[in-house]
Length: 174
Image 1 (tube, rainbow, N blue to C red):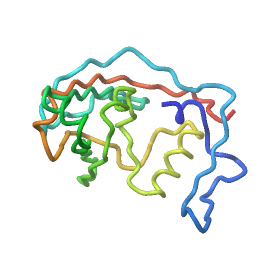
Image 2 (image 1 turned 90 degrees about the horizontal axis):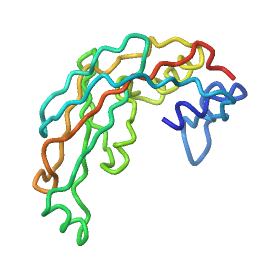
Image 3 (image 1 turned 180 degrees about the vertical axis):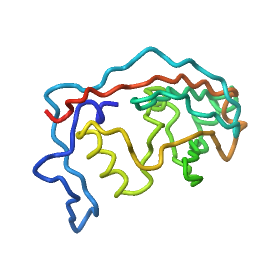
């Protein structure tokens, strides 16, 4: 959310910058005005591993998901000695494509935007350009999500998800 609400694609570099070290680099400038308006919660849901959650409808808004993944008692002990199994958010897009994104359980409670997850660097550029233009017709919105891990024994079930819409002011350029 900090990047989304606090920064914009730099008007000096509206396209990708190519370097030897990094391809498709985007350059951002700090916004002078925060364009984000967090609205009232759309509710919360409990979900088991692998269970599909359909994203709530939030017209003219992006949807955040505050995701609470807890360790099981065994997982708490295990993580002190070893690296725990990664947690993945599996997104199913409107066009049927499925992609699994790794999430960090401790960071996912901050509510990442899940309604529009760019699949490629080109879609990421379209996403940021659309934000600055006030156009929320992003490519291939996410229809549903589920959660996966290689070792469910390390994590408690259920996973708690709270949905929050984020509306952007029409003037996002400054």
